[in-house]
Image 1: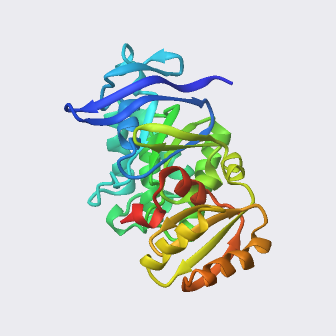
Image 2: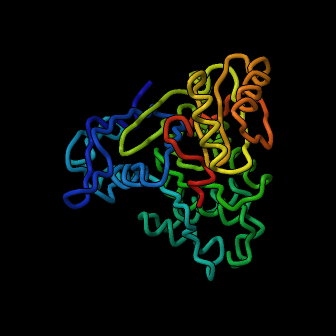
Length: 315
């Protein structure tokens, strides 16, 4: 399979002391959906800025579709589309006007521009609302218009930053379906950043976790979840102090991570181990509010490799 993105030994610093990304290497195959995940400050945004030519790396090699980004920046920009977390839709323009303006920015004009706008309105089911002010669109419709604007110039590589933030479950599922169709029908390569682990699990062909400017884990969602092995036991204590106490008692025997008053314990046989764990905590005089056993989820992998919970990141 051909390569859409190849980064080798890339480093980016801000000033003398801030290292945003350090010796970063990753490969994204053409026609795949690649989820780039990590805590705030892990280097995701800097990586995207470099790949979209909005920032320059200090060192390292970057190629898009086998062309060096450093020497073909202007040429490669026409292959890149970007849908930012904050909507780029002009609320005082209609859906059609927003698409026309975006197309002109990318050099489309005349009949080619009109045809492409109509194609996008049809693909995203916005025809009947094309002449309405976009300020009156629902959240799902605005996100579809954002996506259509990002695709107006027919890019080969699309960057999606938190594409479904603020959408209800039905609108989110609808947008997922659209993204999958674009990948399957047009061979579009997508780089996705999201805090919704179920979104990364559902959409991505491969997942990479970033932390402190480096890739710390990479693979399919199933491969990463399987690395945890067995089950996850979620134990909630009455307060943070009790959770710290419980962590000390259990880490002698189990792999334990803590998020405030909640403990996540990894075990191959969770149902069998839970009574033993509760007995240990009872003997240690730890107050437990609740306990549950579940199969590992991508969020558990996120916590293991980044040390931060998703709720903390959303704050």
